[in-house]
Image 1 (cartoon, helix red, strand yellow):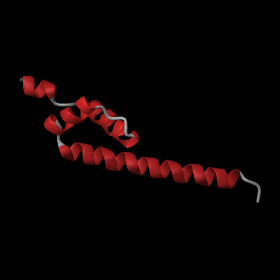
Image 2 (tube, helix red, strand yellow):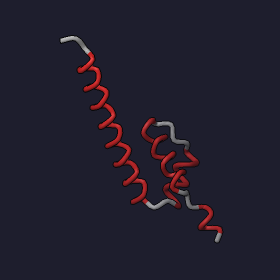
Image 3 (cartoon, helix red, strand yellow):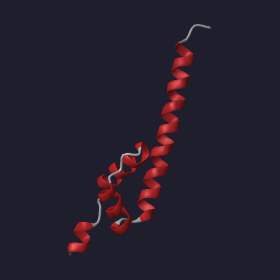
Image 4 (tube, one colour):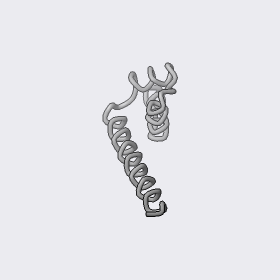
Length: 70
């Protein structure tokens, strides 16, 4: 039962991936993720967040280009 409690939850995994995106992941969280986390969850979250970031950047660029005078 204590092993189940030490596994990071989905919110913790999302926060870990976001921290890793910005390069501010703490060593203790990184160790926890590597020891108790499921790598597939982190990979899926990372890919989804990367796609959201790229789509957001494309949307911002399109919005700026549409708002600029021709």
